[in-house]
Each structure stands twice: as structure tokens, then as C-alpha cells.
Length: 101
Image (tube, rainbow, N blue to C red; front, side):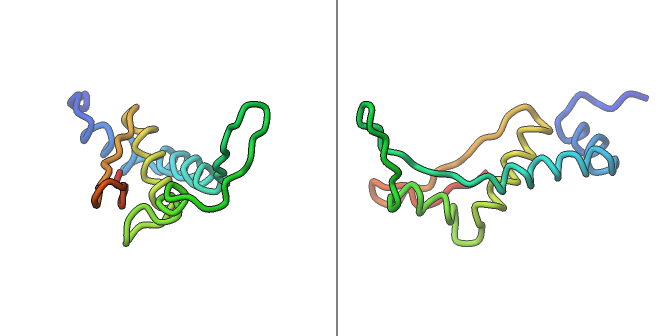
């Protein structure tokens, strides 16, 4: 019997019920979450690292209950399992305040 062609079914059978797939997805997601991120200001031939910026603050803490590592692991896992990863931005005023996978 074939699994119905729906994302939920594929994820359940291929990820939740298969320890090898689960371990592979987890290892890739954790490796990506450990990659350091840097922000640069490009001014022609002179690139300068930016130490303080609202984007860096948002990446350090995408939402009040989620760290960057958790956010990154979730995004990579969704991408590996479904082929896409989508983010929702929550604004407060004119600035983004939260990111959710």
C-alpha cells in the first residue's frame, strides 16, 4: 500500500517512523545551526563587519521563546522534508520584531 501523496503522510512515514531519516535530518539541521553568521557592510572594495544591527538582534532571538539555533534547526528540517521552508515576519511599527518558521 502506497502512502498518500500528502506532505503530512510523507513526513510521518519517512521522518517520524524511520529512525535513519530522523537521524540524518537532525544531524544536518544541527550542523547548520552551528554555523556562525556575520553581517557585513559592503562599501565597494572595503567590506566591514557590522557588530550591532537590528537584523543581528533578530537573528539572535527570532521570537521571545525561540533561539536562533532552534529556529535554524526547524527551518532546515522543514526544507529537507518538504523542499521548502517559509518564514513569517511579525512587525511592530516599521521594524520586524519576530520570525517564525
